[in-house]
Length: 149
Figure 1 (tube, rainbow, N blue to C red):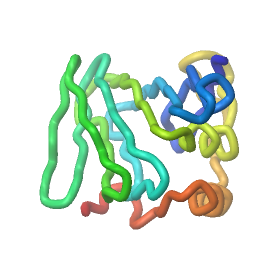
Figure 2 (cartoon, rainbow, N blue to C red):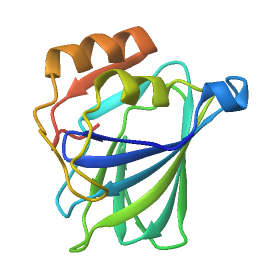
Figure 3 (cartoon, rainbow, N blue to C red):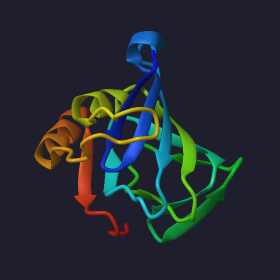
């Protein structure tokens, strides 16, 4: 099941979701433009692992800023407030595993289709819908991009 959607300037390709994994995990390929950052958030129902394919990500957790380069990975336990940013100067790509499933459904509910691979369409995601869908999926948005735990 490959499905590509854009969420706040990030291209997210759902490679596997609960329908293929029986709810065990979601596998998402994310492409972040330089300077793109997630809001500060916490997953209450699933853990997240990030594996860097290309570029540089910084994962912010309580009191830590961990810089990841190609080949590095980082595990974010369930219930851990965090933000993820592309702190490099190229499009950074990473694989995210959310276990159990939950993240792919949030992307499907709130993402928008691009014009073609790598080219966003209308990037006006509905923030209110995103916040409601996040809460329903067990995520909490704690602060806007740039907020640190």
